[in-house]
Image (cartoon, rainbow, N blue to C red; front, side):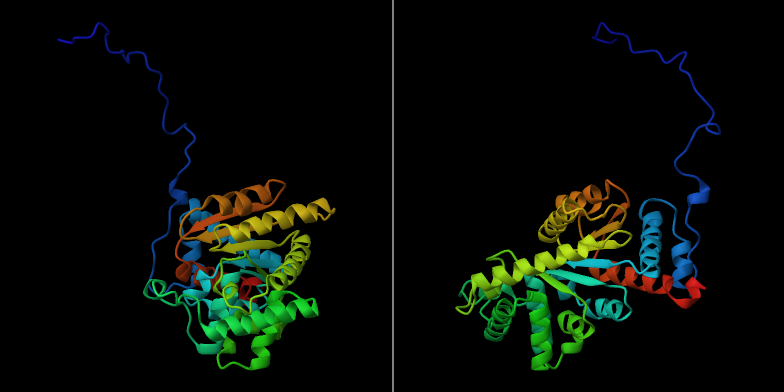
Length: 321
């Protein structure tokens, strides 16, 4: 016998309806097709379920392909981890194919890219050397990059241009694997956005804060120029959780303040987890006036090659015929 004075609510008289008459968010028409051995990438994309990322990913690829066909820019902002997991060849392939109009990097990006060009290796084991104070003390890295940044300030050019030109001038053995060297060869703009004190090259005595500030601010202004032409194009953020999403949002408000029409464009964020700033500063806020933002969660070493392959296929003569 219940100790409580209340009687359980009776469900007699509850109104029901037929499942056949109800609007449903999922139907068999949205289901994936069976995977088959030997499928082409185009067949694989077409076989994805029409739900969530299975619907969004082909939509993003189609939007990027349309931007390319209409000769609208595709700007890429990225953190250095993309470089460290071995994706330079994928990005360089897109650069040669005309599918990346410009690159925006953080300060770590030029470090890992330049070390790969110089030595064919990068990314030290921090825990093994931090205790002795040796972390970040690589001589060539600090000397070459700080010299390039000082040269950029003297010539009134940006950090990205100066570092790329330095790599070409030095003719390092692995320049073909360098984003900055390739961009310099192809005249693809690279802007570098630095937070003072975050990078190992701010430690050596050759570091010049005034030069970093001057050349870095020029890169920000150049990035704003690139964003001013983004109408109908796309901005992709790979693996930058804070710095580049903030830079992008500031650039967008600057160009709109100056009267540039930048309302209808595509944005996408790719990262391991969903961070707050890319979600709001790349995916949500910039597209409130028009366009569409996308969010894809996964490993860069899987997601970026998949996007590149799908985009190259969508832009192939067979796909556009």
